[in-house]
Image (cartoon, rainbow, N blue to C red; front, side, top):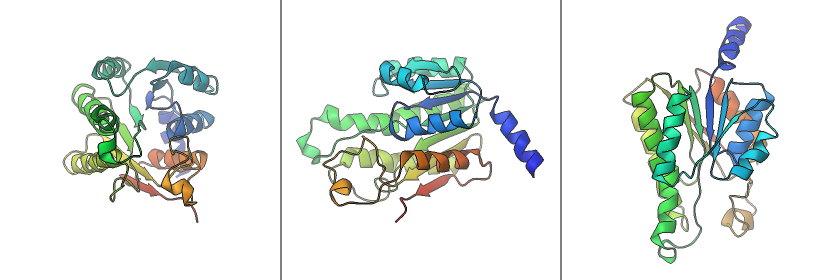
Length: 237
């Protein structure tokens, strides 16, 4: 009913949310969409580069808290976890990602390791800690990939393996625990700077998702208490 919906939104507007990986792409678009709708109370913006965070801060209607974190570094992640617990976050949107487009053996191991760390091990670590030490966590949402977590992705082996693992993590935890609303958003190719000019989808003229439109679908979905645990989103056409 309208009354129930209004009550639900009223509660949402009081919640503390952390946007992890919001300096560009989908993460930035989602943070801006939430701000435009006046959703959530305290907003915590987390990314690797402070200048990007400060740029986003200027577009957010409220006064968010900024935290710098390199999600590939354990010390940074542990410090962030302490902050998230102290601030009693109720929702977490994790959209950190990255990778390389070259044959697996052509890049050094430290380069191949990075996407596995930021796209799988770090969100797994943060979720595990919050589930164990923070009883107020209501929702944790990660970003998968309709392409990379469902089939082989030649040239992006580390990224693809991380996304495969992330999907398996979410679906497995959901099969054993109902303590947290754990979801995975699985978009198709998206038109952001994270998709290189030389990438195959751009060269072949594949239809790309608009981050702003994708963020609207994302926010509608996470606000639906009866929404599916997985949301697949492909570009129109």
